[in-house]
Length: 236
Image (cartoon, rainbow, N blue to C red; front, side, top):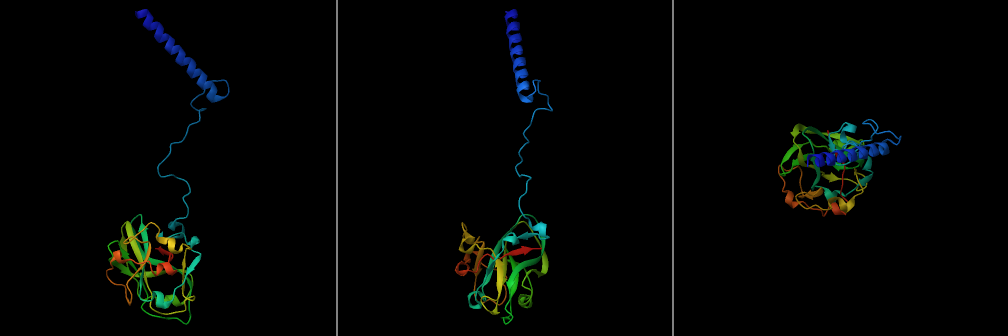
């Protein structure tokens, strides 16, 4: 019995050795057994990936944005009767904690004859609480049709999460004079979303300042769907 076991084991070892030699010859392609340096290995796949992932806000000295400004080639125009006194909200999601000091707006065109007053930018958190606002930005909306920062009255620490950039315009202007940069998304900007998580929406009417709290469940798309949509913003 001991002799049979030894013979079977010896045969198995011999077969395995032959298989390894055959595999080595095939892997090296040179007739010699493959060594550890000649066998190609497949790199391990990482979950996050390390390749090019497209433009990031930090590439342009910004902290966050609603989208790559290179894609903001459209302009949004609305009459003063259509958006005056309404609070326009644009959702932005922060992935890391930042100190938020400025809201950048893409001002595409100005109306030199506009009569503006009580115009503001601000930031609401996910509960609808106003956490920061600018002074009246009416003078800055009359000059320099470029992408530019509007300083908040007081910078604040913004934890990761959902925020809403708020724009309030008041006064009179030519519909195709005062315009903002945006994408060409149109009414598709809120695809798959519903209040209180709309990406673009308006709230309230007749406002002359940003209210300290808003009810995000009351987000409306009626004005957004007429063309007042997808304004481009950034954070610094």
